[in-house]
Length: 561
Image 1: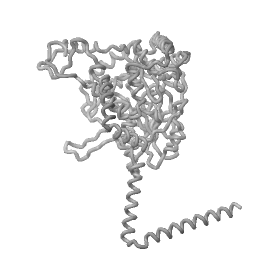
Image 2: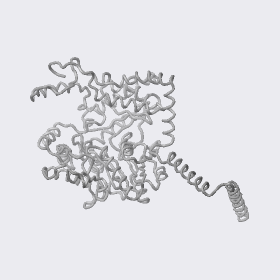
Image 3: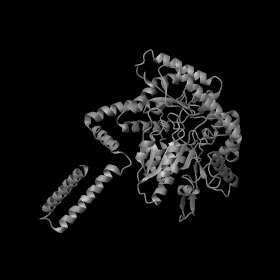
Image 4: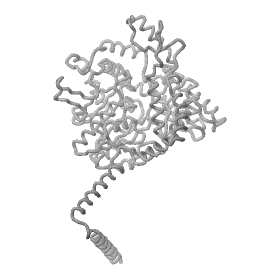
């Protein structure tokens, strides 16, 4: 019976195709050969253009349609006037005048002084500038930002910095001591992440963003060599925005995949479905910044091996906690070069490596990958120009201070610090779980504890904590805030003070849970609720402008400017 039905279906299909063929031939009876050829070429070009418009773009169709819709709607006279008036009010709130107020009598230095100042005068001015800093990070009031900060470490790295203040890694022949230090920082890092003693390699970079961008640039160039003209990288939606920046700068297509709504981990099935012939990179975070959970690196690496795609592990945040977790008494899944298929890792030495800001490492399982990262200009009139990363000249003092931080703590010191930080994070997590009205996102596995609420606007809690001297990270999609625990948080009483302040703030909020958020929290909540993301871009641009705003130029007066 099945065979008869199948034969009937095939016969009907064949008859339909023959009918279509006859109709097409009939339509072409009066056409000359050149017309048929021209029509065919035109149809192919239109189809190719349509495919390019629909699929060959670094932004999704949905995103482009939304942007186009809001662009033209805002050009309507009535809408344009309303939007402009509202935006003027918002932009005033993110101006330097509002955000970065100076003390009475302070002005900005607009021009180079006619005469130079001596050490006493310079230090006096510096101390006056420092009086603007009102957030006390030394008391543990800040999420992340300063990861070490002890007086002993500060004294050591400033002395080392002094010795290398004028050094430059670009000139290894002039500064061979610095070359040795930088090579050792890379080798130590490779060893910590279980890299092959002979094959693993890397570079010291200026920070996590550069480390991530270099890895993306590496795999893009590898893709070009394999004949992939339009490389794609696949990232969980929780991946750091530096991957988006890399895709933008290097003309790669960024494919975002969802995370599990409960665990906040990357959806492996969605990642597998997103793989195409153009995929040149898979990645996972250890941990991801928003909620502090580890992506399933073993499963991601298995996909990479199966399809022959490089796999990057972004350990910029937790990189110098991960190698010491087991010795500190905390088991985590493998997520470094010990996992077959992992080809690169980014890790910030200036976070839990406790080095000064401006240092990170990007590591590779093999030197073949690092070679794609290099830039060489063999024909420049100034000589052969070759650099391992984006910058040419770099601060040797930062590299030397990074080296000093690593050898100062040693393995024992890092294990002790990791134990204290993770214990504090777990303590805070457990304390917050006892507070009605809030919940913890996922299962924090490292140093980050993210909080949300189903009962009230979570940014009200953020605003309340700001009033008590805390400075936390505000997150979006979904709305949440998090505390990234660092060494200052491990000091006696800090964790208990934080839990108490959260408890009291939530208690006050729950007296009127539907009240609207005010201040910076309201601004952040408004920004993530806007369907027109170009408005968020405009607000963000205004904020960055405010960072460099020195006001209107005035006549200089004696004393501090």
